[in-house]
Length: 305
Image 1 (cartoon, rainbow, N blue to C red):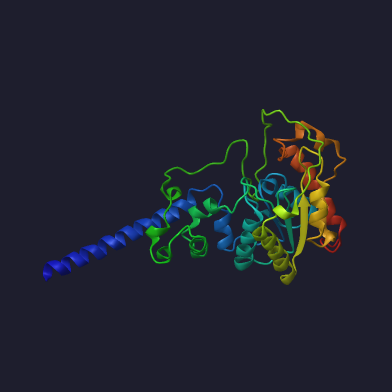
Image 2: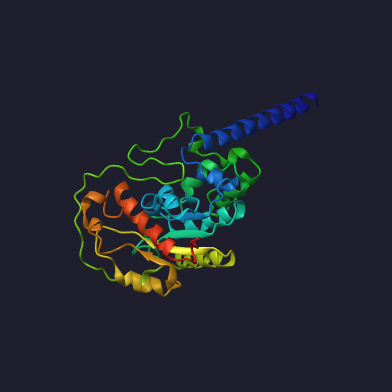
């Protein structure tokens, strides 16, 4: 009997030791990330007047600091590389739950793939995994089938490879992150860029219901929280797809759609592009100023004193 009790005691001690080590690894996993925006969101540290949501074309093509300077609205970029509109909805919900309600949301739109199947933009579960020390993020991974329900009780069930990194992760030197969440591209790719003048057809039948629903939910969240939603369509190194734009306008209130200046010569110059879909920093500065002008000219978005 004494041996049995001793074994139980040792098991309990070992269990708590393993769980304590797992918790330390979960904490370490967060601190080793260069991108701590998810931590700052769930701890209520991003209380800004203007929030940028989107994919890589949001995080690199819109410079939060420049937008803040030109509009006088405190700004933060919460766009994520390779993310789709379903992930953007998730980030918005998370932000509204833990932070003060912003005045303005800028949602960057991927023309023409916003609502279509596109393997390059997904729900970024991998971005959530380093932050599973936070229950709200772990619960999301449970809902999506990445974690078992056991992870709500055991820290060990929340661990991923990212929690075992010994060195701090760093962004690529060509794509650094600034203090306001923007990751501008600094140097041109060696790829040859060809300006595509052909306007491709847009097939509504290929739109995905989940993405349309997420887009609708973003609009509803903004409306119910009295947030002004601005849609920003950034440039690409090709002719603007008016077929997508025509469809897009049926899904939104047209008033706050900001489209880049399709006649601007810089947007047809390879010197301003990293690749076909992403601007270099000097191109992003031009596009950001266009957005600032749009915001400042619409007094319902940014009343001028």
